[in-house]
Image (cartoon, rainbow, N blue to C red; front, side, top):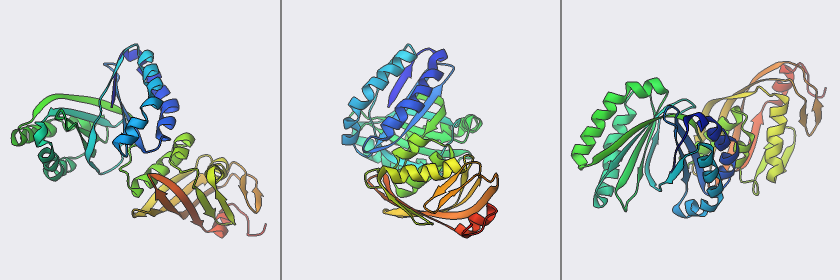
Length: 338
């Protein structure tokens, strides 16, 4: 966790640099599970949290982020402090969006009681938090050596964050009394972005769809294992490696630049999953495929499809796309073979 404090007027420039330049590089590092950026624009404070599969993966990333960390501190004309934590509990009702409200409660626990605190949070506090209106997610960070912990809750928007203050304070007081905790500070921020994954395949698929819809090419590519990637699609498309991922992106994003995927269902296990979705887009670019090219028709297409994913090591290794080619051609005003 990186905590920056500096000039509020320079915060926007720093977060744009983070999102556009630093984020794709960090997310492409082995073992990365995503980043989150929180800001308090009035105070000029910013928290950048990166999440990793293991302590080894986090340690291995240090050299790669040192320059970016220094540059961000210089941009805000301030300082940066670094803290490392374990994430023993992570629960989510929905993925918080840009502009969501985020609260950090910094507490201290006797190091010998950390495991008991984790269980209390997992079994009692987290379910109670999930019952509060407007909550999107909650997770707990712990430093077993010092006993320092942070409970992070994300809310649908800043209004939901404000509404939750009294109920959250009561939950903190109850937990402090039961576990003999000391609440050191409570901080509130606005979410700039988050790409945090739980580490399961469902989270990988959700993130893949989110990046596709926001047209974040670098972030989307970072979610793929480009050495093992393979793809298949109707019409005889079969490709591997980086070319496979690039072809998926270019085929559909160039032909239907405004396209959006609406998730109908996700079915996932530890090896991969199936994403059922409804795709909508306007055919304003050339649609290229193994059978040839279809010039822009200006027509809007709305059709159901599904992707079958294979995942390994926190990355997507294979995507097989299924849709009705005849229906696509019909909506474009064409017929098969024309």
